[in-house]
Image 1: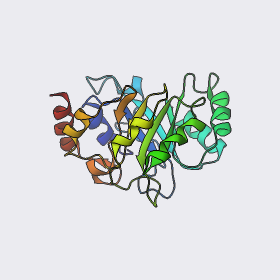
Image 2: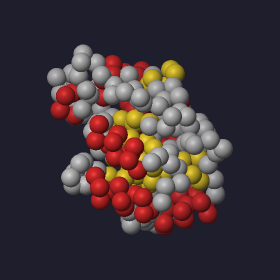
Image 3: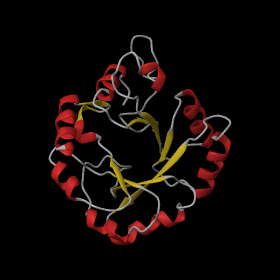
Image 4: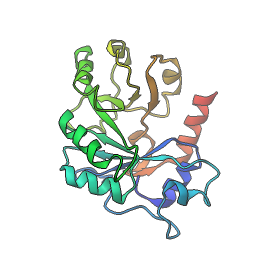
Length: 216
């Protein structure tokens, strides 16, 4: 997300995390801090505008230089960093050591894993000791954003202790499918392109309806 007012409206729905994409090739690329009423939407700053606790900020990067990740983590006050490219475990360890505790205490890391078959799940093993979450997305020719599902049943092969998020084309018609999905480490869902009116702008009413269905 990158529009301050749109962020405020989505925060009012009670979401847990807000994603900011820092990949120049993405139509959602964030180039400046989203603001409204002159306020940077940090957790403390949002309190006058919302009845909900402010969500954490997730910065999404694709094969970015370490210094650029560090700079954005500090300037945008990121709580989590999502690595969506071919980043190495060594890079992630070095980023954590640089940011925590001096620059962004407690910052956490997510590694996206693109999957199309059961064998792809095993990729997580290379990163298990350096990230806090995994995100399983649909393997495609582009870097995410395919709008396509993958077969969630292959996640039976995932046996790590780290929690994971489901991504990959989750849309307004998937509430029942999500409610029927069970895995002991399933921690949440990533809602993106199928809940947008345009890249970077969420359809607030579609999200509201969907979240209400999940809670029924």
